[in-house]
Image (cartoon, rainbow, N blue to C red; front, side):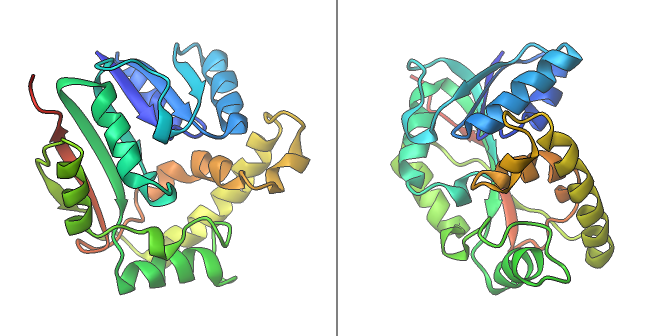
Length: 231
């Protein structure tokens, strides 16, 4: 099965999917992240086709993939409907599109913006990593999916688990350590880490822990089983 990882970053999820036996293609607009992903995949012996490109103009033919997914991506793009249109185009009939993104609520502003980015005592991400106005409400996203010819199947909120302060402390420690290690793999070395694409590297390092930090049925949600209509 051919699967597209849209906004693959440093390739963390793509590598796991490839290990499960899927034929993976990863695409990301950050050439630095793609360079890291390629180098790491080569190091561990995983075959993944990594491309540099934007979701608004995917460099693939129509009906190329049986499935596509994007994790923590839609809240970063400027033209969400264009991205969804491109995903619809490259999916085969009855293809599956899976994603998660962040709901635009007061809690997401407090947790994802204030706690995770703005407040020095708790921040683990660059201050401009997320923009709250780009967060998407489920009703808005469902309407976009329908307009672009995709059939929403299920929206599921991800409930809170564990002590968020404990997770933040753990994430701060791990992110700082892994950023330094991953920086050495970037072209140009550590000085490049503080450039505008720092978020891509941070996402690669922190993804495994961030999966445990998603809070609230009305704050974070994912769609499982959004399908392309049969021909």
